[in-house]
Amino acid sequence: MRLKTTARGIVRAPLAFPPKGLVLGLGVGCATLGFGLVEAFVFRPLPFDEPSSLVTIDEIDNQGRPRGGSLLALERWRAQPLVSSAKGLRGGSNRA
Image (cartoon, rainbow, N blue to C red; front, top):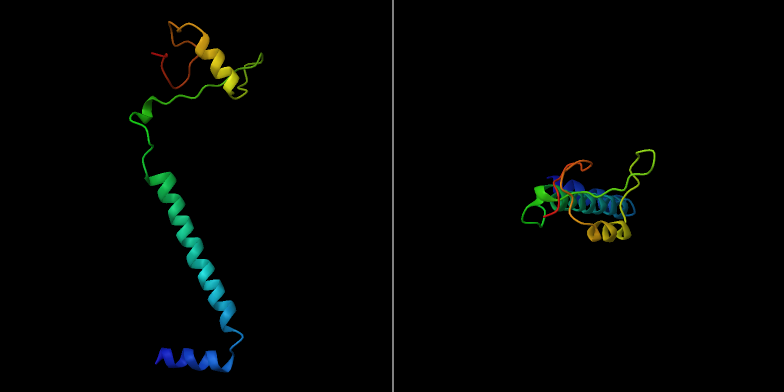
């Protein structure tokens, strides 16, 4: 019965059907994209053996505000000898 009503509506107003189909298609596509992004970034685990051991390296300016890290700062940090205490490190441990 509903199929007959739908077909009759398409025959009576054929120009109204393409925009409705387009909106329906866009809605399905956006929902699929949203679920795909959530699955990829929220539900899938990180591709590391020990994700709890990841750390963030920030530089601190003279006023004590974080400036963000850079590749140059990372190379300078790697060239320094190992730190013997965790003073100044947040959310992580010393390099091993």
